[in-house]
Image 1 (tube, rainbow, N blue to C red):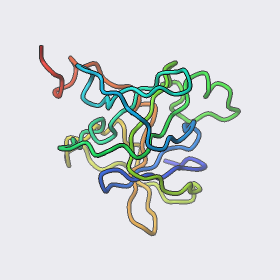
Image 2 (tube, helix red, strand yellow):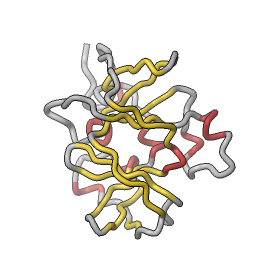
Image 3 (cartoon, one colour):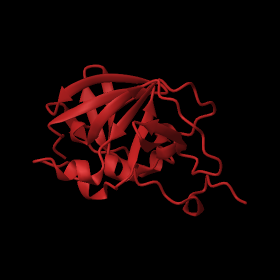
Image 4 (cartoon, one colour):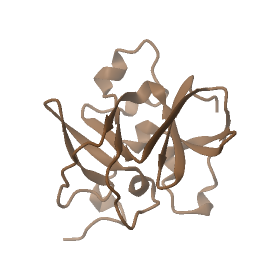
Length: 170
């Protein structure tokens, strides 16, 4: 798989990830997140963002790592909506998955923006763990080590609570 032209790297729970920079709308510092009762376990909460409501997702829970404790929120990567992506001359490959609502993921630290010159390996085999492999586009090799390249279009499509084993039963 050819890498995106540029990717944004970020760290959460000690793991490095990357996403196509074309998806990134902005990065929030220390956003105030309001928890939502009975939301999908991957939903960390809601953020009031200049008159709009942003749904903030917990990356580890969304891709299946789980998280015993939810540390304080340091950063939130806000992704572009379908309207935002429609304005771009070049769109990311999974742009058709974008919705109308503002979504973001909570991360611990923002890394670098790197060019697509890094080698992209296929995702790890599905038999290795219970990860949501559809969210993983591949693995980037970097001098610092391996970085998981995320498929943002799929990542932002949160399954309904009834379709997930982590759902809260009434």
